[in-house]
Image: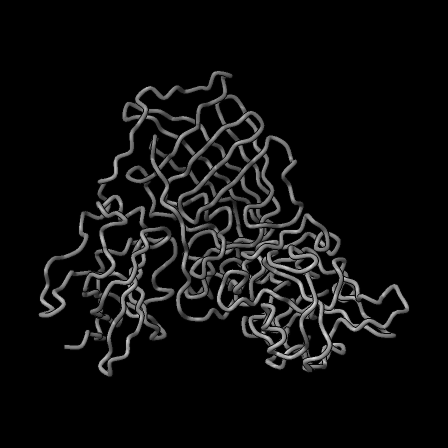
Length: 543
């Protein structure tokens, strides 16, 4: 008997194993109008946040095998129900029923899962179960949690959770944010399928703070650290502005201070972001003040948060959010390992002005000159709604009228990738040792990480034709040195192009240089691939 795949039209399905208000809405990927049932062999089980994942090989009627992914709620919620990393084992034959995807990709939400006999396909047992909102996980709690530290400051150092004590829906405010006319117009067009967090992008500060998952506070002499189980958020906040970047970021620039028995954190320079998984987009005029204090009761050790959110761009008045948390003592965070859905994204963070091409033109270093390379940048950016910007390729040319890649991007600053993560503060910072170019940060126009050294195939050689300062190799000499494959018009096996390593690893004269690591073996596609390249290059939007 072949393994089963069935799709049934349904209405009103209620899933038992999907957390009701997960970190992002399941409606962004799955539809509750079609139920899917699959039968197959478990090849992997990821018991991590933000969602647990079950990987299943399903044998089709023609004997071919399709790898399916089943997505459940948060590992945090499942642990409270008694689940662990050993609940599902590779090699088990299972039957899974859940919602189908909107686009028909081989994914399903986790509605129910049964262990079945490989021969008869009869149910052996139901896997998991447990009461939603249960509390099977009980960390050790300090019964003598002092109100103050030795220096008299409030003692807030612990792990805190609003589970079982909050009076709002998970990850939401008590009431919808008071949006002004501009905010309401944007909210009316909100489409949950475009929630960037679905594709594992960082969330903004407000959405991170209202998390329904535990938060850990650590207090030090000159700073505090707030770590979040949901999204894997981490904030190191000093009592002065030494950590300020001076540009808008997802968490912004924050400064902490104590006032009596309270810890106060003020944050500015924030990127525009959704306030919750239901939308309510806030602008970059946003500022946030968080106040933390102890509010112990007879029921135990309690932390109180008062958060005031101001945004004249989209709010008619401030959001005032109050939340209580219980001490969780020795609570252990579950690791985050966000995996995007199988569908391609059609939108990215609108601040994107720096990306690595997801593909080359397929003809080695023959890009059709600078014009052809620029056109390729624009075309790729257009696939994610960013084609209206002035995109140029970060490439130098050589010869009498040589052009410096650095000069081509003059005035562009700061640099952000498709996820809204800063790559560099300005052109000078981009060409300094302090830039933020790393393999996770240098992503494609769709926010995807490209294969680097150690991956198969390796694609880390990036065409630039430039030295480490972004200059054409003969820009300050009279020597005609072609390091650009005839100014990006040649795919011959002769000639060469200077390349960088976006992952900052590998061989060559400058293996950690993102823009000038070594020369290619030639200009043909096979030549580029021979040293770990694929004809990729950087694209930057200029003013």
